[in-house]
Amino acid sequence: MPEGHVIHRLAIGLTDWFGGRPVRVSSPQGRFADEAALLDGGVLNGAEAYGKHLFVDFGPDRIVHIHLGLIGKLWLIEGDPTSPAGPETLRLRIARGELSAELRGPQWCRLITDQTRDAVIAKSGDDPIRSDSTGDRAWARISRSGRSIAALLMDQGVTAGVGNIYRAEVLFRHRINPFRPGQTITRRTWSAVWADLVGLMRDGVSEGRIDSVREEHLPEVMGRAPRVDRHGGEVYVYRRAGLPCLVCGTPVRTQLLEGRNLYWCPRCQRKR
Figure (cartoon, rainbow, N blue to C red):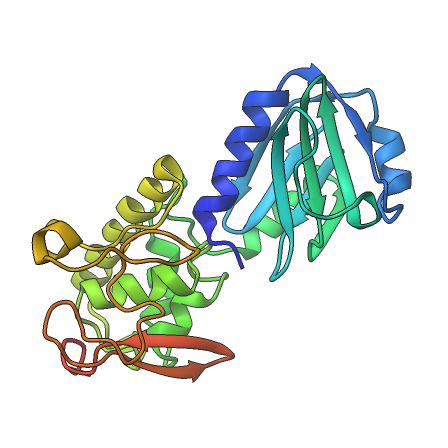
């Protein structure tokens, strides 16, 4: 599932390409055909992201709400369509001239009102990428919870947009045992974690990849091979199970936690 920085990049791209302009809207697959017909030829005012939710604004009470889920993809294409599947899987297409956005396989693609959008946002946690999020609402829930901090960070009602990679990496960077109950985390520690998430995730928006490794642990400094992974970027523990920790050399561990693979270093993050 894409992490929050990907959704924010898509919102920026949609706004840059189509914002304030009339667009053609269609649903070759047919599952969004009635809604597409209402929007076709209208002006796309802009798009915004909140956590993993993408809202495409076509005017009052005409908001396309997209959640990519586990398999959804949204491509921004210049020129001939280049996405790998045919039109039979194309849920939504937004086009202007040679520019198009193609959506396939989303968890949600629905036309909603402004009130419904506001309700979705109200149920979401603090989004580190947004300037209107402070981390205070997240702290209020974390400080009262007996759930593990690893589970809480993945809860979109606590920290919106944080996914498996950012979760694993920020806990490692602060040497926090992922199984610690949220209520044992101090306010000072949470403030440091929040500030780190803000920096890492906003960098992800600007760079288009997740890099969480500090300068002293980069490949060229340590004399190691760069990471090769479809997600790109240099990381400490994510998807490095069995490999030596870049800091202490202990093999990185993994365990299933609430349906997702958790990664951590049992030495660097041993303190509960």
